[in-house]
Amino acid sequence: MKKIILFLLTTLALFGAESILEQVDKKLSPSSADSYKKLINIEPDGSKKEFLLYQIKKGKDKIVSLFLQPDSEKGRSTLRLDENMWLYLPDVGKPIRITSMQSVVGGVFNNSDIMQLDFSAEYDIKSQTDEGATIVLDLKAKNETVAYDKLLMEVDKKTVTPTKISCYTSTGMLIKTLYYKEMKDFGGGIVRPAVIETDSPLYKGYKSIMVYGKITAREFADEMFTIENIGKVQEFRK
Amino acid sequence: MKPLHVILFAAVLGNAGDYDFDLDAIEVKPYTLSGYLKGENKLQGLNEDSPLFHTKNKESMKSYGSEGDLKFAYFQDAIKLDSEVMVNYNDVDREYSDAYTIAQLFVQYKFDQNNLIEVGKKAPKWGKGYFVNPIAFFDRKKDPNDPDASREGYVMANYRYNKSYDGDVRNVSLDLIVMQNNDHINSDFSQKDENNVGFKAYFLAYDTDIDLIYYHRSEQSDKIGLDFSKNIQTNIEVHGEFAKTLGEDDYAYLVGLKYLTEFELSITSEYFYQKNQSSRSEPFFDHQYFMNKFSQKEPFNWLYGALYYKNIYNLEDKSMQNSFGATYSFKNNMLLDISYNMNDGQIGSEYGSKLVQDTLWTKLYWYF
Image (tube, helix red, strand yellow):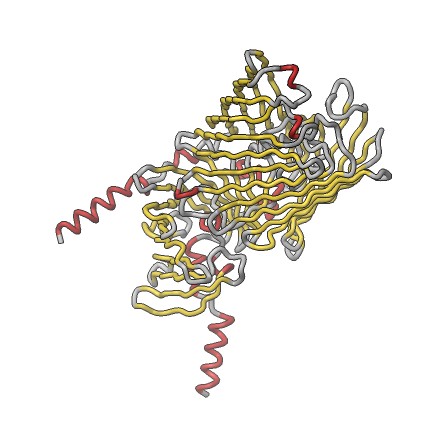
């Protein structure tokens, strides 16, 4: 009897129940939403550069970003469809395929941080450790196209949102650490950290901050996430 | 503990402004306005071996140029008006010239998410190549010295159908372009007055961009074209283009790749071949070229800066053009691009015949 119960529980855990990672994804963003966020790159001497982005996201694998500021980046758009990524520059006037490792804005954040898909779409849970108020998830990339091979994610049990994510290469080298902070109620049941700070041993003394200003659940047609529309993201804003 | 409190409080205060979000900055307006002003200076040494040298017959040439580019779009429901205007003023050894160009001016009408039409002057910019696009049948040729620069379009009507799917084919998009050229409209498109119809089918299939093109010309042979682009790894993209004139021994193709190293060195390499030479006045007129660009982003932690080296090599006559340059993007929306460019080749070769031997080229952009 015990064996049967154990088997049922295991089956439920494997196939039935939503994984902790999927719960984290749901907490961070509705499955279809648009959002505004600013990025700040802070240099060792304290000087800063700010970027303002508009993003729309649908499902686990579609996201598009439009730069609204600064003026030198205005109109620049990035589309991510699963592991395909394209960049649109207004002067060039057509989409160009880019890689997820490339940095669009300079600084510590790269494309995959800014164009983050659902974690559960890119990573499998290798192990999870209960550490009182937090759960530590050891995450392994589903395939080689994911920007970071391994993540160590600390999840706050109470809010089911990350507090810290360490990103590693396949050789175990720490690339960067992301710190999630400032829980905020964005309305519509969306309560999540409004700020993500990051630093990197590769950029000593540099820091980047991502601040969410607005997140709204909204439905989008799949066609909005195509290269034909990458130069028309401005038309999707409401 | 007090000092710790003070430190924590100071840390919070230090970030307080960074964590603020100005919601006024995201107000949606029915229009967009952007563009740049550019000032440039060229100090050029002349090539005594050039057949054009006698027209100058001196050692150097000084050029000053300025360019204004204004992009304006207005949106209302299903209609969008899109425009781009360019103004140039140049001084080449005190010979002054100016130009005013409507680069694009078209109206877009969206029937629904899948169907739209665009009518007016626009540049479709077909093709995947960075330096040259053999399948860009409805575009002006790129400037190899500045392949990313805005280009003037032609007056045309463009209907587009766009549809997304689940599965291995994620997206299909069909373009139909109708365009006329004669003494009154698109007069510099072709030497013959004719009606042009272009049909392009785009597929995102198996994570690959694929375009298939049929181009009908009323007075000349039809052409076909295809291109593709694919990321074969997270840091390697491969692409290619092929164009052929039907019924004639005339074709051209390009293969290329983009590679990004772990330390953010971008390498763009392309090989271009065309069966028949084009007019010598055009860029890439000869049979085959090999083009490379190496761009190192943020070298030595130089944030917003980049170094680049570009080489365009004519494989037929072994002549080449080399460019060494640096760019820096300032925090006040200004971009500085300084490069040293050098033509090299035997007498009579393409780059060995250029009037200009070498150029120190400074460009300063201010974006608004």
